[in-house]
Amino acid sequence: MGNNVCPFCGSDKCISRIINESYTYFECSGPNNGAYIGAYIGNTVLESDPATQRKLFNLIYEYVLNKPMCGDQNWRFFYQTDYKLNEQDEEYYVNLADIPYPSSLSEKADRVLINLYKLFPEYSDEIINAYTPFRAVFSNSEEEDNWLGFLSILCDLGYLKETNRETYKISSKGLQRIEELSRDGNTLIQGFIAMSFDKELTYIAEAIKTAIKESNYFPMIINEKEHNNQIVPEIMHEIDNSRFLVMDVTKQNFGAYYEAGYALGKGKQVIVCCKKEVFDNSESKPHFDIAQKSIVVWNDEKDLVEKLKKRIRATVK
Ligand SMILES: [Zn+2]
Image (cartoon, rainbow, N blue to C red):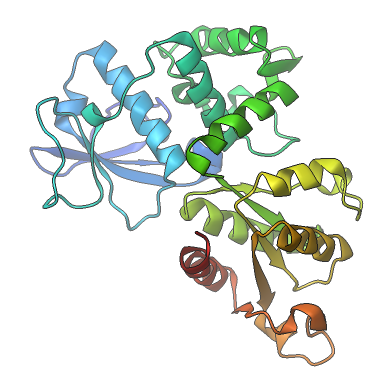
């Protein structure tokens, strides 16, 4: 056990374990929407000078946001300027020296904006200091002032708006910028979730979000209050901006069918999911229009995550 500063949240309370002379293992449940993160951090990172270490921690954090960690991936981050990863290296080795640190203000602004969007993907999300997302903004110091300062620069650029004292939201200009950036290289990075918004179905939404995140896409779900069972321009816009759509029909929902139809019309991949006990019941069986489509039939949340990840891998190009 050590009391190294956690590379993910900056706290010294998170678990760290020295594995060998090369790596220390960190376990953090602080940032990243409360999702658990575990990763091996090389001593080449931990023993670098404080300024370099902060930069490397920021890069690690950004990497985690891009490729959400599953417990079994065992990512190993190290820093070696004279070393290029080669074929013999395991796929989870990451040489931080290969990842460019943002050099100009505009590059930094773009990357920070994307990072914040990944941390706070929903319209209703407010960017707050709840789980120290300062690493996502490439903050040069652990001081709160520093990252809040950068957020106010993003406000000046029009990407964020201050909704309250020290709370922010991504502005429509910010969302447009994210869209431009995510279209670079023709890669849409979002997966849209269409389903009923019943409170008791939250666990389904969470499982779908997890599967989408772990497939390296951003889950997009639009809150009920903005939804109201009709397809509004905002929803169309978000579907346009998505690579694929996941619909769960465990509970029938008119809006979800409409959204899926819209997505199909736009040539998007639509993945339909349904809980097994509902699917097996002839009375509650999903609507006939989608009955021929091969449906992901799931038993429980864990099963849903695993099957959906497989389906996304197999069908989303
Ligand atoms: Zn932590």
